[in-house]
Image (tube, rainbow, N blue to C red):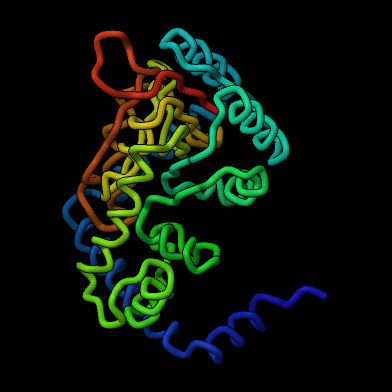
Length: 288
């Protein structure tokens, strides 16, 4: 019989007592930032605006999905539809085989966790690198993320030091800056040699066929622009009707996630690289 949530949580806290302190500290930090960021605006009015957009979208979801597919295709993207994890994995298998993919870099995507992209690709012999620092830490540890914003929120500094010393050969007492530099060295090489980049999407704009990605580390931009193939995994709930809707959703997203006014990097992807553009993928695939 599967262990219940409360029993599992109690056991985890008993085995790793530092987890309570790590999670509490991070949660209080996030909450303080959110409270400050929301205090600068009329948060209820913004939420009402966003809710009205979503209600409108849901009432005409089939129309907007059709429009998104049309606009994405017109911009040069290839659109795929998946009903379940098996469908996603089959689409990825076809792309991996077609392009001879041996190495993949990934931006943080909870949808990719749900459909077990990493495990599936690794079973096929593909090397996968999580490039968000928190995701990279738990990938090295062989663990799933514990939080959608802070995947390694449960890890203390000493635990990360020991992990990096074992996996990357850093000093046992390495500073946080040294740990970040060690990860950066590995991931920079992965970006430059990857055959495919996989990301999620914060939004897809039906009106323009634009894939919108928000981040703070810059790793997603490298994952989507350096490899020759970019695959975006998108839940249909990420759809927005118009580009103008981004005005409220981008600001609410950053405030809700990390307490920022806006994400450090906002990428608006409009199809694959064009002939006169210096970078970007040769192919963009969007899997809804």
